Length: 270
Picture 1 (cartoon, rainbow, N blue to C red):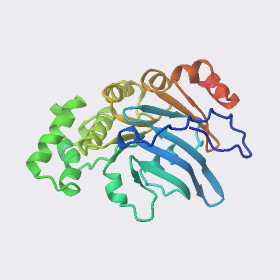
Picture 2: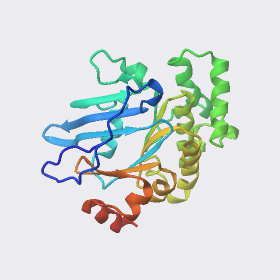
Picture 3: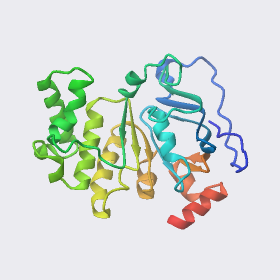
Picture 4: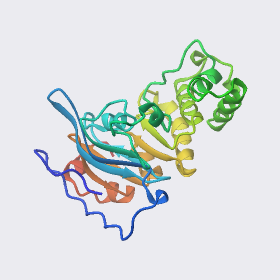
């Protein structure tokens, strides 16, 4: 894959991808592909001609300074923000096609935000099962069983009948993860899932995310947790000024970064 052509902010070139010798089959397709994606708010261009992919079963961590376009890029992948130009492919489905079924596409992509957005008047279990009944049309008992299973996976089965206010911030974020997983998504997106948590609550959320990564869930993770990116990611993408500046394995990004802005960024946070 290649980053966008350098504009006012030069971007270190990446090697060209090798040409496929034969047509790709559905099994060969990346889980997510982004081609030339840009997004502006008025005269402010936040994401500039980004091209990348997330392979099936891969964990891609996106890092970079604040304001570099990371979260906007992630929201575009779920069409919470509509890009100005470019393409987004979920497997064989082009999400940015004029006739794309946006609601159907969103049901295939789970997203976890900085803030938990749980319904305070509902139990933890109902927060997880609500979309199963209202969106998927699942029966109430089946939805409850699915919710319980997902809560058990994130270590919160014992809190199923509690209201969210009785849980810590870290526990509430794990409920949000269980809610997203309950929809059986093909891809999980995490937008700074630990940034709103007190430091002592971060560990348990990252442990759940590591388990998902090791279990083969396809994930794109915007994060400031460099330890998680180094340990759990298959690849790390660095963004600055809205551009994809460098992408590679954690070892290459953290030990032999090429782009000067990435080297500066790492020197300030590691």
